[in-house]
Length: 229
Length: 113
Image (cartoon, rainbow over all chains, first blue to last red; front, side, top):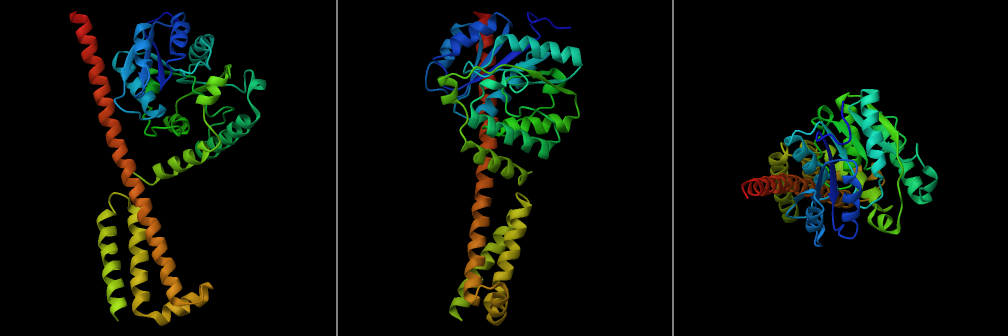
């Protein structure tokens, strides 16, 4: 059994130029978990310095690789340091720390290896209309390509057991990792559960988030990956 | 005859390149080779190119060959793109190793200090 104060729980926060918000995100997280690793993905601002000052372990990519690459780096680091549960948490302040505990509780209650946050099981009413359409399309795509019956296919808030994390090997450096990770969860055959979470959309997180044009890039990335061994 | 010889040399180069590339990206390599061989065949037997073009509704055999060339070019672009992705995979592996090694050094330095 894990409690939120357990050192076996690691939260991985991929961050790129998040100096404006990273201190508040870490401060909030520290109220719930002890082990926070910020993966600074080649930021040109002071994200890494602020992260370290706030007491998080900070890893710095020498160049910008993308969120998928940052997540994989953080997961590997946490596993190497004995993590038993790993939570992925976006750095732009759109996730709520209280949801971390809900994901961990769901893992234990459902004896699952993956707990996936879903904004559509939570307060879906706050999702902007265009984003809602894109996310629905992504959900349908996930259903067709992986067989996973999810309500939210692109939510950065997830929790996984050590056993689950060892089955994840993200090769999609950029946004297509969100689809890739679901494909790997499906391929692992391990149990997963969806958990209602709340996304707080701010003007900042909307500006940092995906755009409709990204959908094409994501599809191209996924297609290109299928052509390579 | 000069044009046919020139095109044959160019298409032969593509066949050799596609053969060499087939291990890295089998699909692109095989497709490039097939299209280049088909192009070579039509360069030397233009009557067949014309017949095929008429069947395909293209009109002239030379147009068909031009289209085949465009297809070859697109396949080569795709192959180049896949190569760049493979390079990016290597860079990512390297950057990750550097990142984690630096973190370990920092942790060691903190413990020693």
